[in-house]
Image 1 (cartoon, rainbow, N blue to C red):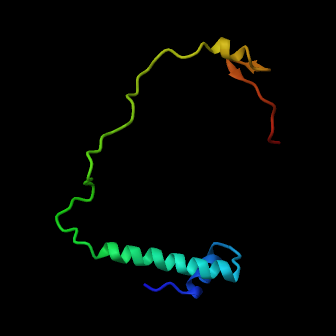
Image 2: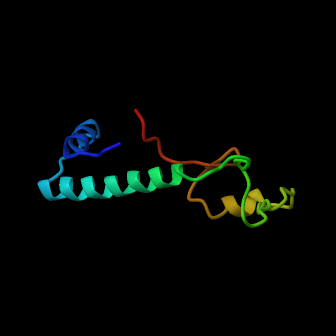
Length: 95
């Protein structure tokens, strides 16, 4: 796929972007480079490679979700300028 200046102008128009001539030229070259790289990747033989395989062993890095003691509600609300029914009370901002 060849990226042309017209393609960049069309996408910029869809995105409601006003680009200068220099920006259009720069983006044309950058996008052409990206497409060229993707085309090169498409030449690789990926037959027999599972889509989720990695070179390094990957493991879940999330912590366990453990319930623990939280802060006391009355202590936290004691710092609030105003509270009502165990909640922060804030001024109305919508009519």
